[in-house]
Length: 423
Image (tube, rainbow, N blue to C red; front, side, top):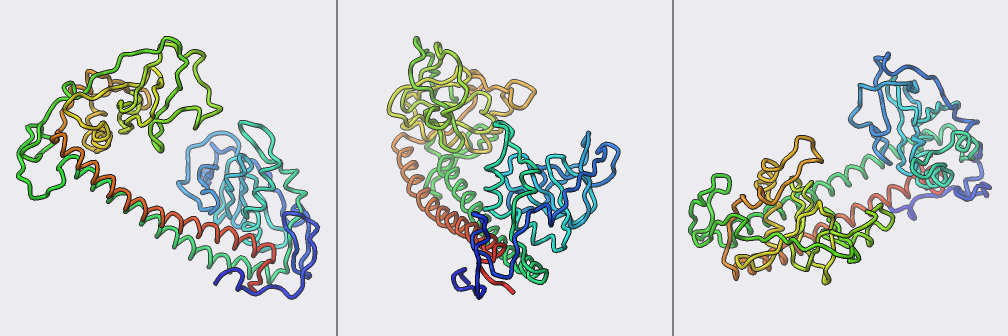
Protein backbone atom coordinates (compact mmCIF):
# COMPACT_ATOMS: atom_id res chain seq x y z
CA UNK A 1 0.00 0.00 0.00
CA UNK A 2 1.31 3.46 -0.90
CA UNK A 3 1.15 6.26 1.65
CA UNK A 4 -1.31 8.22 -0.50
CA UNK A 5 -3.70 5.28 -0.32
CA UNK A 6 -3.57 5.03 3.48
CA UNK A 7 -6.41 6.53 5.54
CA UNK A 8 -6.12 10.01 7.09
CA UNK A 9 -7.65 11.54 10.21
CA UNK A 10 -10.92 13.41 9.75
CA UNK A 11 -9.65 16.82 10.84
CA UNK A 12 -6.26 18.44 11.38
CA UNK A 13 -4.90 21.51 13.14
CA UNK A 14 -1.69 23.52 12.95
CA UNK A 15 0.81 22.07 15.43
CA UNK A 16 2.62 25.39 15.72
CA UNK A 17 5.89 23.56 15.06
CA UNK A 18 7.38 23.93 11.58
CA UNK A 19 8.93 20.47 11.22
CA UNK A 20 5.74 18.76 12.42
CA UNK A 21 3.20 20.68 10.37
CA UNK A 22 -0.49 19.82 10.75
CA UNK A 23 -1.48 17.13 13.24
CA UNK A 24 -4.79 15.39 13.98
CA UNK A 25 -7.14 17.70 15.90
CA UNK A 26 -7.23 15.36 18.95
CA UNK A 27 -3.43 15.22 19.34
CA UNK A 28 -1.42 17.37 21.73
CA UNK A 29 1.96 19.03 21.29
CA UNK A 30 4.25 19.05 24.34
CA UNK A 31 7.93 19.68 25.13
CA UNK A 32 9.95 16.47 25.29
CA UNK A 33 10.86 17.07 28.94
CA UNK A 34 7.14 16.81 29.81
CA UNK A 35 6.88 13.25 28.48
CA UNK A 36 10.43 11.86 28.57
CA UNK A 37 12.60 11.99 31.69
CA UNK A 38 16.33 12.42 31.12
CA UNK A 39 18.10 9.77 33.24
CA UNK A 40 21.60 10.62 34.48
CA UNK A 41 22.46 7.67 36.71
CA UNK A 42 26.24 7.34 36.39
CA UNK A 43 28.16 4.17 37.23
CA UNK A 44 31.77 3.08 36.87
CA UNK A 45 31.91 0.90 33.77
CA UNK A 46 35.01 -0.95 35.00
CA UNK A 47 33.19 -2.04 38.17
CA UNK A 48 29.98 -3.09 36.47
CA UNK A 49 29.11 -6.52 35.12
CA UNK A 50 26.24 -5.07 33.10
CA UNK A 51 26.14 -5.14 29.33
CA UNK A 52 27.82 -2.04 27.84
CA UNK A 53 26.56 -0.26 24.74
CA UNK A 54 28.67 2.34 22.96
CA UNK A 55 27.75 4.54 20.03
CA UNK A 56 29.50 2.08 17.74
CA UNK A 57 27.15 -0.65 18.97
CA UNK A 58 24.01 1.05 17.66
CA UNK A 59 23.27 0.81 13.94
CA UNK A 60 22.39 4.13 12.31
CA UNK A 61 18.70 4.70 11.64
CA UNK A 62 17.59 1.14 12.43
CA UNK A 63 18.52 1.29 16.13
CA UNK A 64 19.69 -2.32 16.11
CA UNK A 65 22.21 -3.27 18.80
CA UNK A 66 25.31 -4.76 17.16
CA UNK A 67 28.62 -6.23 18.38
CA UNK A 68 28.10 -5.45 22.03
CA UNK A 69 31.39 -4.42 23.69
CA UNK A 70 32.51 -5.47 27.16
CA UNK A 71 35.93 -4.07 28.16
CA UNK A 72 35.51 -0.34 28.86
CA UNK A 73 36.69 2.09 31.50
CA UNK A 74 35.31 5.33 32.94
CA UNK A 75 31.84 6.54 33.78
CA UNK A 76 28.77 5.24 31.97
CA UNK A 77 25.05 5.90 32.00
CA UNK A 78 22.84 3.20 33.48
CA UNK A 79 19.67 2.21 31.62
CA UNK A 80 16.78 -0.20 32.08
CA UNK A 81 14.51 -2.10 29.67
CA UNK A 82 12.29 0.24 27.59
CA UNK A 83 14.60 3.23 28.08
CA UNK A 84 15.47 5.15 24.92
CA UNK A 85 19.15 5.67 24.07
CA UNK A 86 19.81 8.75 21.92
CA UNK A 87 23.26 9.45 20.44
CA UNK A 88 24.13 13.10 21.08
CA UNK A 89 27.54 12.93 19.36
CA UNK A 90 27.14 13.41 15.61
CA UNK A 91 23.35 13.15 15.88
CA UNK A 92 23.07 13.04 12.08
CA UNK A 93 24.05 9.36 12.40
CA UNK A 94 20.64 8.74 13.99
CA UNK A 95 21.82 6.29 16.63
CA UNK A 96 18.60 5.80 18.57
CA UNK A 97 17.74 2.51 20.28
CA UNK A 98 15.10 1.08 22.58
CA UNK A 99 16.77 -0.85 25.39
CA UNK A 100 15.61 -4.42 25.97
CA UNK A 101 17.87 -5.23 28.94
CA UNK A 102 19.34 -3.60 32.03
CA UNK A 103 22.77 -2.23 31.15
CA UNK A 104 25.19 0.67 30.91
CA UNK A 105 26.10 2.85 27.97
CA UNK A 106 28.45 5.55 26.77
CA UNK A 107 27.90 9.02 28.21
CA UNK A 108 27.59 10.11 24.57
CA UNK A 109 24.18 8.43 24.69
CA UNK A 110 21.36 10.29 26.39
CA UNK A 111 19.01 8.00 28.32
CA UNK A 112 15.31 8.87 28.24
CA UNK A 113 12.48 7.15 30.12
CA UNK A 114 8.87 7.65 29.08
CA UNK A 115 6.73 9.26 31.76
CA UNK A 116 3.49 8.43 29.99
CA UNK A 117 4.31 4.96 28.62
CA UNK A 118 4.60 3.63 25.06
CA UNK A 119 8.37 4.22 24.73
CA UNK A 120 8.45 2.48 21.34
CA UNK A 121 6.41 5.35 19.85
CA UNK A 122 8.90 7.89 21.19
CA UNK A 123 11.82 5.83 19.91
CA UNK A 124 10.36 6.02 16.41
CA UNK A 125 9.68 9.74 16.76
CA UNK A 126 13.19 10.55 18.04
CA UNK A 127 14.73 8.54 15.19
CA UNK A 128 12.54 10.08 12.48
CA UNK A 129 14.47 11.95 9.82
CA UNK A 130 12.72 15.25 10.53
CA UNK A 131 13.57 15.15 14.24
CA UNK A 132 17.17 14.09 13.58
CA UNK A 133 17.59 16.99 11.15
CA UNK A 134 16.20 19.38 13.76
CA UNK A 135 18.61 18.17 16.45
CA UNK A 136 21.55 18.13 14.04
CA UNK A 137 20.93 21.79 13.16
CA UNK A 138 21.53 22.70 16.81
CA UNK A 139 24.88 21.00 17.42
CA UNK A 140 27.97 22.72 18.80
CA UNK A 141 31.61 21.84 18.02
CA UNK A 142 32.93 21.54 14.48
CA UNK A 143 35.06 18.39 14.69
CA UNK A 144 32.93 16.52 17.24
CA UNK A 145 29.43 18.03 16.90
CA UNK A 146 27.19 17.30 19.87
CA UNK A 147 23.55 17.96 20.62
CA UNK A 148 22.52 19.60 23.87
CA UNK A 149 20.14 17.75 26.17
CA UNK A 150 18.70 21.14 27.14
CA UNK A 151 17.88 21.90 23.49
CA UNK A 152 16.29 18.48 22.98
CA UNK A 153 14.28 18.78 26.17
CA UNK A 154 12.41 21.92 25.10
CA UNK A 155 11.56 20.68 21.60
CA UNK A 156 7.84 20.20 21.15
CA UNK A 157 6.64 16.88 19.75
CA UNK A 158 3.25 15.43 18.74
CA UNK A 159 1.50 13.36 21.42
CA UNK A 160 -1.34 11.06 20.29
CA UNK A 161 -3.62 9.31 22.78
CA UNK A 162 -2.22 6.27 24.59
CA UNK A 163 -4.04 3.72 22.42
CA UNK A 164 -2.84 5.47 19.26
CA UNK A 165 0.78 5.55 20.44
CA UNK A 166 0.62 1.79 20.90
CA UNK A 167 -1.07 1.26 17.54
CA UNK A 168 1.49 3.44 15.74
CA UNK A 169 4.51 1.66 17.24
CA UNK A 170 2.96 -1.79 16.61
CA UNK A 171 2.16 -0.80 13.02
CA UNK A 172 5.71 0.48 12.43
CA UNK A 173 7.28 -2.59 14.06
CA UNK A 174 5.53 -4.84 11.53
CA UNK A 175 5.98 -2.60 8.49
CA UNK A 176 9.62 -1.74 9.17
CA UNK A 177 10.47 -5.42 9.74
CA UNK A 178 9.09 -6.26 6.28
CA UNK A 179 10.86 -3.33 4.64
CA UNK A 180 14.17 -4.22 6.32
CA UNK A 181 13.78 -7.81 5.17
CA UNK A 182 13.23 -6.64 1.59
CA UNK A 183 16.26 -4.35 1.80
CA UNK A 184 18.41 -7.19 3.18
CA UNK A 185 17.37 -9.42 0.27
CA UNK A 186 18.28 -6.71 -2.24
CA UNK A 187 21.62 -6.09 -0.56
CA UNK A 188 22.38 -9.81 -0.63
CA UNK A 189 21.57 -9.88 -4.33
CA UNK A 190 23.91 -6.93 -4.89
CA UNK A 191 26.70 -8.72 -3.01
CA UNK A 192 26.17 -11.89 -5.05
CA UNK A 193 26.22 -9.95 -8.33
CA UNK A 194 29.45 -8.21 -7.31
CA UNK A 195 30.97 -11.53 -6.28
CA UNK A 196 29.96 -13.22 -9.54
CA UNK A 197 31.30 -10.26 -11.53
CA UNK A 198 34.67 -10.47 -9.79
CA UNK A 199 34.86 -14.24 -10.35
CA UNK A 200 34.29 -13.72 -14.06
CA UNK A 201 36.87 -10.92 -14.23
CA UNK A 202 39.49 -13.00 -12.44
CA UNK A 203 38.72 -16.04 -14.57
CA UNK A 204 39.26 -13.96 -17.71
CA UNK A 205 42.57 -12.39 -16.67
CA UNK A 206 44.08 -15.62 -15.30
CA UNK A 207 42.62 -18.25 -17.65
CA UNK A 208 41.44 -16.41 -20.76
CA UNK A 209 38.06 -16.56 -22.48
CA UNK A 210 38.15 -20.02 -24.07
CA UNK A 211 37.37 -22.77 -21.52
CA UNK A 212 38.41 -25.45 -24.06
CA UNK A 213 41.95 -24.17 -24.64
CA UNK A 214 44.75 -26.65 -23.69
CA UNK A 215 46.35 -25.81 -20.33
CA UNK A 216 49.88 -26.19 -18.99
CA UNK A 217 51.58 -25.95 -15.64
CA UNK A 218 52.76 -22.38 -15.07
CA UNK A 219 55.76 -23.51 -13.06
CA UNK A 220 54.59 -21.35 -10.15
CA UNK A 221 52.70 -23.36 -7.53
CA UNK A 222 50.32 -20.59 -6.39
CA UNK A 223 49.47 -19.58 -9.97
CA UNK A 224 48.66 -23.13 -11.08
CA UNK A 225 47.72 -23.90 -14.68
CA UNK A 226 47.50 -21.34 -17.48
CA UNK A 227 46.59 -21.54 -21.19
CA UNK A 228 49.28 -23.43 -23.12
CA UNK A 229 50.15 -20.47 -25.37
CA UNK A 230 50.56 -17.96 -22.48
CA UNK A 231 53.87 -16.97 -20.92
CA UNK A 232 54.93 -16.48 -17.31
CA UNK A 233 57.15 -13.51 -16.56
CA UNK A 234 58.38 -11.84 -13.42
CA UNK A 235 57.17 -8.27 -13.07
CA UNK A 236 60.71 -6.94 -13.47
CA UNK A 237 60.36 -7.84 -17.16
CA UNK A 238 56.86 -6.36 -17.42
CA UNK A 239 57.14 -3.02 -15.62
CA UNK A 240 59.59 -0.16 -15.31
CA UNK A 241 59.50 2.07 -12.25
CA UNK A 242 59.02 5.71 -13.18
CA UNK A 243 61.59 7.77 -11.31
CA UNK A 244 60.70 11.22 -12.67
CA UNK A 245 60.10 13.81 -9.95
CA UNK A 246 58.40 17.20 -9.92
CA UNK A 247 60.78 20.16 -9.89
CA UNK A 248 58.08 22.70 -9.01
CA UNK A 249 55.34 20.73 -7.26
CA UNK A 250 52.79 22.69 -9.28
CA UNK A 251 51.30 19.77 -11.21
CA UNK A 252 47.81 18.54 -10.15
CA UNK A 253 48.04 16.31 -7.10
CA UNK A 254 46.56 12.84 -7.61
CA UNK A 255 45.40 10.31 -5.05
CA UNK A 256 44.19 6.72 -5.09
CA UNK A 257 40.60 6.08 -4.01
CA UNK A 258 39.38 2.50 -3.61
CA UNK A 259 35.98 3.67 -4.86
CA UNK A 260 36.95 5.99 -7.72
CA UNK A 261 40.44 4.89 -8.75
CA UNK A 262 43.21 7.41 -9.45
CA UNK A 263 41.68 10.88 -9.19
CA UNK A 264 42.66 14.52 -8.81
CA UNK A 265 42.77 15.02 -5.05
CA UNK A 266 41.18 18.49 -5.09
CA UNK A 267 38.11 17.10 -6.83
CA UNK A 268 37.38 14.75 -3.93
CA UNK A 269 39.09 16.24 -0.86
CA UNK A 270 38.87 19.98 -1.24
CA UNK A 271 39.52 20.63 2.46
CA UNK A 272 42.04 17.85 3.02
CA UNK A 273 45.36 18.76 4.59
CA UNK A 274 48.20 18.46 2.06
CA UNK A 275 51.94 18.87 2.26
CA UNK A 276 53.31 22.42 2.37
CA UNK A 277 55.34 21.65 -0.74
CA UNK A 278 54.88 19.03 -3.46
CA UNK A 279 58.37 19.47 -4.88
CA UNK A 280 60.01 16.07 -5.47
CA UNK A 281 56.63 14.33 -5.72
CA UNK A 282 56.44 11.51 -8.25
CA UNK A 283 55.24 12.28 -11.77
CA UNK A 284 52.34 10.24 -13.18
CA UNK A 285 51.41 10.03 -16.87
CA UNK A 286 48.29 8.62 -18.47
CA UNK A 287 48.34 4.77 -18.58
CA UNK A 288 50.82 4.50 -15.70
CA UNK A 289 50.14 1.97 -12.94
CA UNK A 290 49.93 3.62 -9.52
CA UNK A 291 49.55 2.32 -6.00
CA UNK A 292 50.12 3.40 -2.45
CA UNK A 293 52.95 1.29 -1.05
CA UNK A 294 51.13 1.20 2.28
CA UNK A 295 48.01 -0.31 0.71
CA UNK A 296 49.39 -2.88 -1.71
CA UNK A 297 48.07 -5.65 0.57
CA UNK A 298 44.57 -4.33 -0.14
CA UNK A 299 44.97 -4.70 -3.91
CA UNK A 300 44.65 -0.95 -4.45
CA UNK A 301 46.38 -0.69 -7.84
CA UNK A 302 45.01 1.64 -10.49
CA UNK A 303 45.75 2.63 -14.07
CA UNK A 304 45.83 6.39 -14.64
CA UNK A 305 43.02 7.33 -17.00
CA UNK A 306 43.64 11.05 -16.50
CA UNK A 307 44.50 12.82 -19.74
CA UNK A 308 47.17 15.06 -18.21
CA UNK A 309 50.22 14.38 -16.09
CA UNK A 310 50.13 14.91 -12.37
CA UNK A 311 51.96 14.07 -9.17
CA UNK A 312 51.56 11.69 -6.26
CA UNK A 313 53.14 11.44 -2.83
CA UNK A 314 56.58 9.81 -2.58
CA UNK A 315 54.79 7.05 -0.64
CA UNK A 316 53.20 5.99 -3.92
CA UNK A 317 54.82 3.76 -6.53
CA UNK A 318 54.50 4.62 -10.23
CA UNK A 319 55.20 2.17 -13.07
CA UNK A 320 55.01 2.18 -16.85
CA UNK A 321 54.39 -0.98 -18.85
CA UNK A 322 56.85 -2.70 -21.17
CA UNK A 323 56.14 -4.38 -24.51
CA UNK A 324 54.59 -7.53 -23.01
CA UNK A 325 51.46 -5.63 -21.91
CA UNK A 326 48.99 -4.02 -24.30
CA UNK A 327 47.02 -2.10 -21.66
CA UNK A 328 47.83 -1.32 -18.02
CA UNK A 329 44.24 -2.18 -17.12
CA UNK A 330 45.01 -5.89 -17.40
CA UNK A 331 47.48 -5.56 -14.50
CA UNK A 332 45.08 -3.46 -12.44
CA UNK A 333 42.49 -6.24 -12.68
CA UNK A 334 45.00 -9.05 -12.17
CA UNK A 335 46.35 -7.48 -8.99
CA UNK A 336 42.92 -7.60 -7.36
CA UNK A 337 43.02 -11.38 -7.47
CA UNK A 338 43.18 -12.74 -3.88
CA UNK A 339 46.21 -14.85 -4.89
CA UNK A 340 48.16 -11.71 -5.78
CA UNK A 341 46.96 -9.78 -2.75
CA UNK A 342 48.28 -12.66 -0.65
CA UNK A 343 51.66 -12.38 -2.39
CA UNK A 344 51.74 -8.62 -1.81
CA UNK A 345 51.01 -9.19 1.87
CA UNK A 346 53.66 -11.89 2.23
CA UNK A 347 56.33 -9.76 0.57
CA UNK A 348 55.47 -6.46 2.26
CA UNK A 349 57.87 -5.13 4.89
CA UNK A 350 56.69 -4.08 8.35
CA UNK A 351 54.89 -5.56 11.34
CA UNK A 352 52.16 -3.01 12.06
CA UNK A 353 49.12 -2.97 9.77
CA UNK A 354 48.93 0.39 8.05
CA UNK A 355 52.69 0.76 8.14
CA UNK A 356 53.69 -2.18 5.94
CA UNK A 357 55.18 -1.31 2.55
CA UNK A 358 55.60 -3.23 -0.66
CA UNK A 359 58.86 -2.15 -2.27
CA UNK A 360 59.66 -2.37 -5.97
CA UNK A 361 62.27 -5.10 -5.58
CA UNK A 362 59.72 -7.33 -3.82
CA UNK A 363 56.96 -6.52 -6.30
CA UNK A 364 59.22 -7.22 -9.28
CA UNK A 365 60.00 -10.70 -7.96
CA UNK A 366 56.35 -11.76 -8.40
CA UNK A 367 55.44 -13.78 -11.50
CA UNK A 368 52.33 -13.23 -13.62
CA UNK A 369 50.69 -15.09 -16.52
CA UNK A 370 50.76 -13.13 -19.77
CA UNK A 371 48.46 -13.64 -22.74
CA UNK A 372 49.45 -12.50 -26.25
CA UNK A 373 48.86 -8.75 -26.61
CA UNK A 374 45.92 -9.10 -28.99
CA UNK A 375 44.28 -11.58 -26.64
CA UNK A 376 44.77 -9.15 -23.76
CA UNK A 377 42.71 -6.59 -25.65
CA UNK A 378 40.02 -9.18 -26.36
CA UNK A 379 39.92 -10.05 -22.66
CA UNK A 380 39.58 -6.40 -21.66
CA UNK A 381 36.84 -5.82 -24.22
CA UNK A 382 34.94 -8.84 -22.90
CA UNK A 383 35.35 -7.67 -19.29
CA UNK A 384 34.11 -4.18 -20.17
CA UNK A 385 30.94 -5.51 -21.83
CA UNK A 386 30.33 -8.14 -19.15
CA UNK A 387 30.92 -5.64 -16.33
CA UNK A 388 28.46 -3.19 -17.90
CA UNK A 389 25.72 -5.84 -17.74
CA UNK A 390 26.50 -6.64 -14.11
CA UNK A 391 26.73 -2.95 -13.20
CA UNK A 392 23.33 -2.28 -14.75
CA UNK A 393 21.75 -5.09 -12.74
CA UNK A 394 23.49 -3.86 -9.58
CA UNK A 395 22.30 -0.31 -10.23
CA UNK A 396 18.70 -1.51 -10.54
CA UNK A 397 18.92 -3.33 -7.20
CA UNK A 398 20.57 -0.32 -5.52
CA UNK A 399 17.86 1.96 -6.85
CA UNK A 400 15.23 -0.39 -5.45
CA UNK A 401 17.07 -0.37 -2.10
CA UNK A 402 17.09 3.42 -2.03
CA UNK A 403 13.38 3.58 -2.81
CA UNK A 404 12.64 1.12 0.00
CA UNK A 405 14.73 3.22 2.41
CA UNK A 406 12.97 6.39 1.29
CA UNK A 407 9.61 4.72 1.78
CA UNK A 408 10.67 3.57 5.25
CA UNK A 409 11.73 7.12 6.20
CA UNK A 410 8.52 8.65 4.89
CA UNK A 411 6.42 5.97 6.58
CA UNK A 412 7.95 6.67 10.00
CA UNK A 413 7.69 10.46 9.59
CA UNK A 414 4.07 10.19 8.44
CA UNK A 415 2.98 7.81 11.20
CA UNK A 416 4.51 9.66 14.16
CA UNK A 417 3.15 13.04 13.03
CA UNK A 418 -0.34 11.79 12.16
CA UNK A 419 -0.16 12.30 8.40
CA UNK A 420 -1.55 8.77 8.07
CA UNK A 421 -3.98 6.95 10.35
CA UNK A 422 -2.97 3.45 11.48
CA UNK A 423 -5.59 2.84 14.21
